[in-house]
Image 1 (spheres, helix red, strand yellow):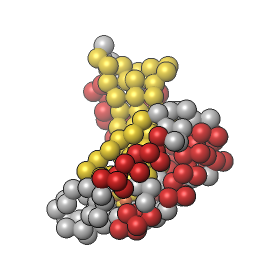
Image 2 (cartoon, helix red, strand yellow):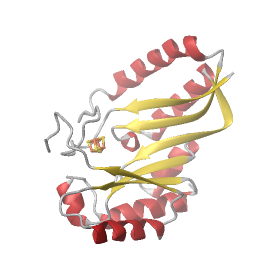
Image 3 (tube, helix red, strand yellow):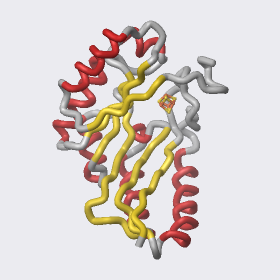
Image 4 (cartoon, rainbow, N blue to C red):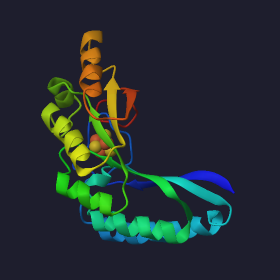
Length: 201
Ligand code: SF4
């Protein structure tokens, strides 16, 4: 039995950030047909991998999966458990953007089976966040981490971006210092890259 992980891409976003080259769309019209098609894709891959793969991790990435209704995520988690061999203690992560969840909504995601969140903070500097055209500010980012902790999530990743124009070494170190004061268990740091086809490029 091979150990493996499942990645589910939820492509919906509130708006398009200037540096983003992920597949994401700004619409709420296609959500229902998307979930129907997602189940068909799960059926397809289940036939290939249900016998010899043991999945220890499920990651809902995007896009902004936290914009979804927790019941839809619950439905997909249950469907995956029906169609694949998923470990009892599998890590189930939801990518989350600050400002898209309340403590109450996070509680519903936990009920849906989510036991880890990955929060796209990118920076604790409001000028950096404006430059990146993110929808949140520093305080919203901090509040989202604290709400996740209060909701009972104790496995919290945050994403940070470095190499932002005008970001000095001191500003980057300040970002890291803000991050380690929060109840996070993991920090993913990425360099800003000029990707073909983005607004920034
Ligand atoms: S929120 Fe994330 S996926 Fe959506 S547009 Fe911004 S960077 Fe891209």
